[in-house]
Picture 1: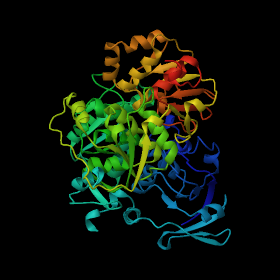
Picture 2: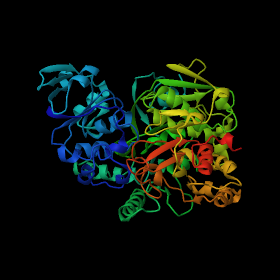
Picture 3: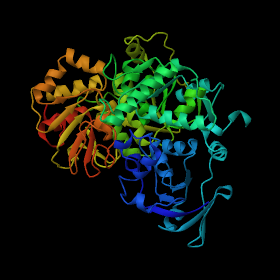
Length: 163
Length: 423
């Protein structure tokens, strides 16, 4: 899976900046997308392209349980978030709802990947390749259950009885 | 096994579980509100298109619904969401729907204990991150998103990775004017806003034994702000008395084994505790009130599931009695049952005499939704749970988190104030 990086070099990007509270009443996915990252980067909607990845620091998605957050990002075209760590509800919403891939990366990947770099994510090899800079990093493998839910295409398509 | 492991083992039909095991746990109660409910409906629409049946819920008697975020309806869209929610509960035969302006209503997490909706030992999930609150009753209480709640509604179970448990031991009774909110801010300041991530935060020790159920609810509520999967206190006679007074019967307490294991134990001495605040823009950006920056406050907000339970209002009233507020101050009891007690016991008169506005139960301004949101550059002291950029309104507004006593004392002076300086 290939895409370009939008980098926010900071920790604790919370759900209130990903999709501010005033939009919690909105359940139209296309409309939510127009407000994605509004609390942090008002230009986000104009710069994001289909297939992009977001790169950020620790504790991405902390705060609320609002599924609006991964919904808004995925409906802008964001396919994966690469972060040093994730808050738990954002992580499980992203996976169970099959909105986007939450990829845990190492500090050197975080430091080495820049805004605009073209990245190739190979989940089968747990590898992240920076095509622009010709560097390869390891991603933290998904846990067994997360890997299975992602492979199935979301929680509703995952059949635990067939394990 | 500790209490959480015992609850999850029982709920997943296993004789024992250990941290990192993945289980599908049967759910005893599930809650949604006027934000997560319509979100779940969108998931149902998506499932229908995929040919998955959403005709019947697994057990409508185990589902309950609250209207709290955008009530009273902030605008046409939020009014339509309330109508959608009403149609949803009617169509699926959900009887426990707490409707705004009708009988008992309030913030979902407050109803969970005020209306005894959750019992000790339950696996309780809710479509809201502060579902953790109700762990204070001795339940495994955990917040989930719309897809997961939809899954629970249709299947009656959900996957969990069994969390490891951090045990927070409080030695000694908290001093006067130091509240549970001060303790939990102190803890979050020490472990960081992801210090409890994916874990259980369990509270115990003589200081917790001495604490009221409502104070324990404040502790568990704020575990969300350390990233925890859930917060929990072992249920005791206080929990039994609390729930029995609200009509609950046949309580079955689950407690951890004597040899229960915890991955880490933290100890705190009550005698060292002081009133705390969290400065903008994170609940872990804490300091003692005596070291608070000297800022001119615009507003004091005493509301939310975190800071507007009955004892919170009582504490604020103790400070405000016979005094006048210097800045705009709003008190919003977290449930109408609390509002009523506050009226019967004279708290509302104290607030009104002090010049405070008393509003209806709503999540309202806590999440920047409506009813008192902040303008650019406005500074608020608040008994709520989060102070991220834009949390209570404009992205360049600021929120300081505090206990109800500190918020009340600060309302009187217009600066961040230690209640001990007034009383």
